[in-house]
Image 1 (cartoon, rainbow over the protein chains, first blue to last red):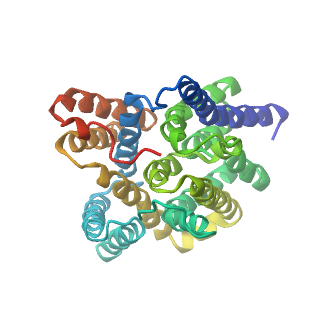
Image 2 (tube, rainbow over the protein chains, first blue to last red; image 1 turned 60 degrees about the horizontal axis):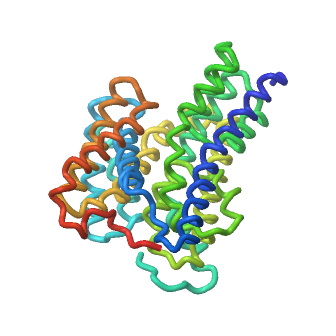
Image 3 (cartoon, chains in turn blue, orange; image 1 turned 90 degrees about the horizontal axis):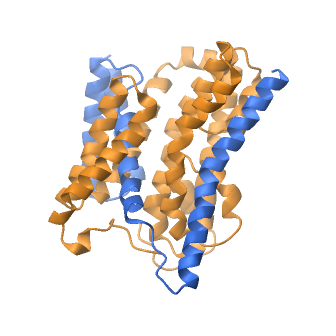
Amino acid sequence: MSTEIWLTLVSIAVGTYLIRVVPYVWMQRKQARSHNEGMMADTPDWLTVMGPAMIAAMFGTSLVPAHPTPLAWIASAVGIIATLLVWRKTRSMGVPTFVGVLVFGLVEVVFR
Amino acid sequence: MNISEATPPGSAWKQGLKDALPLLGAYIPIAISFGLISIQSGFGVLETILISVFIYAGASQFLFVAMVASGSPLWLVVIMTLLINARHVLYAPNITAYLGTDKRWIPLMHCLTDQIFALSLTILPKLAPQDRMAWYTSAALLAWFSWIAGTAIGAIAGDELTQRWPLINDVLPFALPALFLVLVAPRCTNLVWTAALACAAVLALVVKLLGYPNVAIPLAAIAGALVFHAMKPRLPSDDAQPTEAKP
């Protein structure tokens, strides 16, 4: 890799880290100021909605299969239903995820 | 999991590893693909691994190797990859209330990916404050190391692996939507939250299918938040806040 490409890599790495860390430092200072002024340090209302909304959006984008064939869509639908059913029963994270992947894989393998 | 008091020593570390385990199903196959594509684009094995160590952001890594390989201007490569990662700006402020003032959180922010954010927003409020750093560190480091290991495997033997076990690439990444689903489902506690989150999920899927994967998440999240605020007057005041407890 040339020096220019290394510098590009370092710029992206530093930029990505700053995108992750600067908002943390900003929010921490905002909360410290609120605390010093004797106010409740609370997360802004719009942020508390954006967090879950971003997770829901990630769920939506991750649903699109790498190879979006009809079989992959059907397997995704069956896998999601299986995940949801097991989650309703267990209210946990690991088991429903495992069962979802298993069911998705079974549909992919059996009907391929 | 419902931890309200401090857990025995080591337990939060184990819980972090356990909670992050489903991520491996998605991280490793995607990282193997990245390693393979990076080598095919002309990068060396060590260079490929270092990209995963330092950038650690899936979509922008793929874009980085593709743009560099195609001879794009390097300033444009920097701008485009950072634009893709711009959505991460919202992650830390959402969880800062659970983190406290310990300076060690600053380097740990390197590992705040989409998936670690989603896990943290769900799990951290349930943990005792003194357990949060141990939980986050173990979950985040497991995810990061699995990404680096997957990249190394892909760079060294990705071609052979994907030929021998083609299903690895097709099946294991389903861990991601399954995990996101179990993170979203507990928040659907009433009609308003359900409508807002369903709107965000469906819109993100549609926008990605239309060929705009990089704007899908922020755009759909904003739409979901707007739906929430439009329907909020229907909520009893106790339900207007997210479901998790405050730290």
